Length: 243
Image (cartoon, rainbow, N blue to C red; front, side, top):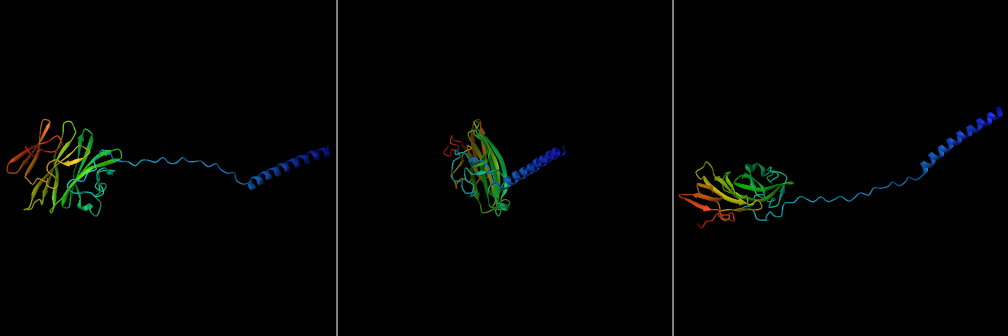
């Protein structure tokens, strides 16, 4: 029985040693084996994201009278209506201040009006709001020899919403003996802008009073110097001067 027990114990011990040796062999084999190549995931090429663009329906036309912002012409896109985003950055920023901001409701969508007073001048930006920001329709600006006070005096939108007329007023050299009032009449259909009376640069009215006079579906412009002259708005959005 002892001999049998010894053989059984020896056999069990040998199996244990072999198991340990096999375990060690496996670990050694795994350590010496070259690393298995990892499957690389093939990434799909990134889908190009188109850059936001303004509608091509916006006319690529020259600025009205003078250039206001060199870097922003028709179809330029800006993220918001703050003065820095509109191109008025230092060192010229302190010389520019906001004069007014208004919105026109036209049949083809709203149009934002941003008026700024310059050191010796005034400017107006017309912009269409969109999903990616604001698209510049066009700009108007003027430069004077003296300080300018600048306001949007009044505006009129056609009953069918196809166009709007703007009347802006400037007081040049306010509070001085040389003070004078100047008026400019502009039109827009939301896709372009134009001078509605006169031809730049001979379109600033140096008179005491100018006013828009709606009558039913029609619009008239009263210009007062010594007497009042009345002009009717034509179908092209300009006032007729031969009547």
